View 1 (cartoon, rainbow, N blue to C red):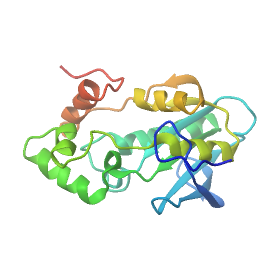
View 2 (cartoon, rainbow, N blue to C red; view 1 turned 90 degrees about the horizontal axis):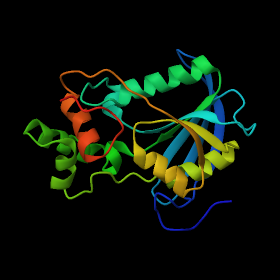
View 3 (spheres, rainbow, N blue to C red; view 1 turned 180 degrees about the vertical axis):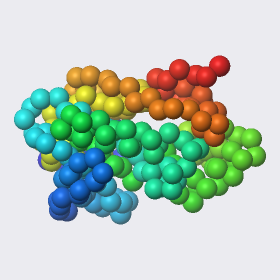
Length: 210
C-alpha cells in the first residue's frame, strides 16, 4: 500500500494513519483524519465532508501549512483566504476533501520563513528570499498526497489550485484530476508583489497586476 522510495513529488510516500474524529467548523462539520510521516516526524491531516469514496471526482484542495496566513491572518500572502475559500466551497457543495500538509514556507520551515520575510522587508521577492537563504524556490513534496488519497478511497479530483506544479505532481502520481478549479483571492497592498512573483517566477495561473 505504501512505498519506501526516497522523497520526490511524484513518488508515493510512507505515511501512517493515526485516527479520525469530527471537526465542527464555521462552515460544516468535517471529518478530520490524522497521518504521521516517520521520515520527518511531521503530522498531516485531511478534512473530508460527505461521501468521498464513491469513485466520483471530489472537490479538493491541497494546502500547505502557513501559520502566518492560516492562523495569524497575515496579508503578506494568499494562503489564509485560499484555505477559507476552499473550506467554504466544499461546505457549499456538501462534499469534498482538503489535504493539509505541514510544509511551512514552501518547505523551508517557520524559522527560515521569518528569515525570508526579513529579506523581503529589505527588498527581495519571495523567490529571491528563499534562494538567498540557500533553498530552492519551492521544496514541497506532493508525493504525500498519494497515501492520504488512497486511505480515503479517493480516485479523482476536482482540484482547487492556481499552481501548475500541483497538477503536474498529481499526474506524476497517476491521480486523476478531472477538473482544474481556480482559487483566486483579492489582492491587497501587502500581497500584490508576492502574487505577481508567483505568476511570473513560479508559473501560477493568476493574472499579474501590471
